[in-house]
Image (cartoon, rainbow, N blue to C red; front, side, top):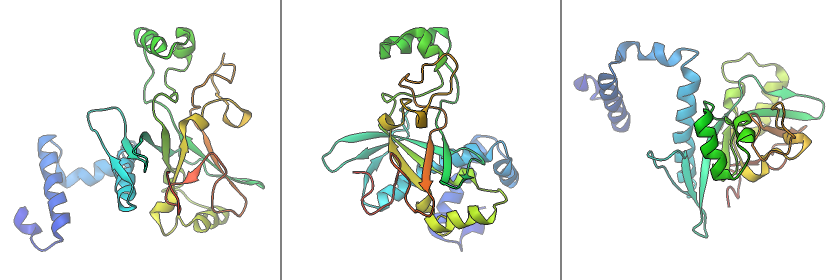
Length: 243
């Protein structure tokens, strides 16, 4: 197999050799791997993990200090100029959530845990946060500001592999997402996403909407005809990105 790869780009050859090695370790048939990756249930998960590495490389190319720690439950760490380190969480847009109205464009970001906590775990986490265990149990698949400092959101998942109408294509062209993958990345501080207002309401039953948890689907809003979103969201790769 390695002899067959001799004439291709060296970095690509190295990556392909590593892929072959992983497939052998995991008992995955390399010849049918493309079918696994193309599976509609699997592809979004692979894309989600891939996004962590994509934004890591893009940030690094922009001269922003960034590191990953595979041993910790944090997607990446970003070093600011004052040497403060921020915990970053990488999230995707909700499938088919690109919505265009007379006011502008709304995009939902999927921002939740992959699983809920059991009774024992809920009590432990509630104690750490110093909140009522019953409150935590209701929100056990949601995040608080103590989990991470910023959310880095990729909006591609809201429209990828979908049939787009003219207005949707026009919006993607306006923000540059049709030509530049850096244009699909946005960020917001976690403290600006918690449920405190009508624009960021927690949708849980028995919640007073001022719970301090981040809603499952915080929205990015672009006023009609504008390239940049409304606060608290900002473009990651603007002239002055994360500072």
